Image 1 (cartoon, one colour):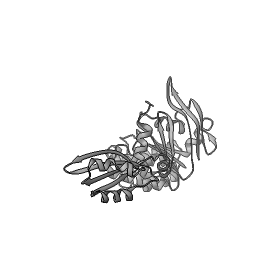
Image 2 (cartoon, rainbow, N blue to C red):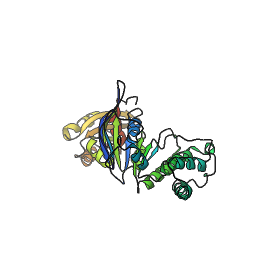
Image 3 (cartoon, rainbow, N blue to C red):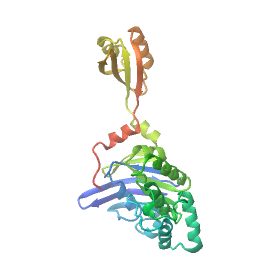
Image 4 (cartoon, rainbow, N blue to C red):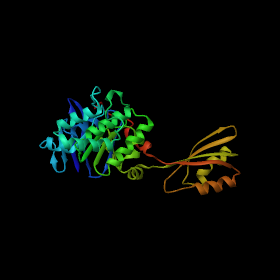
Length: 314
């Protein structure tokens, strides 16, 4: 379990992270979402002990990271955004080097190597020079390096940046499988990737937590009115504008006409679905309905709404 309480980090006069608090439970995959420069990497570096907080506390399994930095780092596997690979080394040599730093050698290293090679799908490249590996394999090598000591916690900073769609699917599948046995905390500015991978989403903007919950919880908390887009034929302007008097729950927004097709936009509350009444009204006024498409708030709308002012330079 990780518990972050009133965590802040200042770089001189710049407040990169501003008194944020959240918990992560064992067995969770939690996404840390924010625009570039919102404070994600600064937070992750504090959680892994690479940066000292200006204020606040971070506890990992009831140990304070300031007082127990080395003990906590033994429990964490960290993949930075800029994957720190020694590209002139072979994959095997690189993993052996990192294992040696953690005093894993002999039979213990052979077992650890077999485990991460299998989990990360590196069988085909384990004897290759890292520079000859694709970007997708380099990310897998970085994950293997973060996992060589079999940590209980994985902290991943932008793990799919720069990957093509096929590579993203591969890394996503790997992360989801790892989440069955480890606590996984991953940052990203790619909403679709976070939504497809994690159990819960934390959104940070300008160093502050602005949302925290599952996709369904965020949708429920932030969903506003529904926009209904209709395409019809035979709708006179007067009959369209009269809808609001006839159906008080519907707000008329706009009417455009192209090639005898009227595009109409209405707005209504999420608990007052007027589509059946609109259909009856259309029939009464001799409209031919070509399309009736409601647009509800989605996570992309929520993210844009919460981060429209952009982030800091952290």
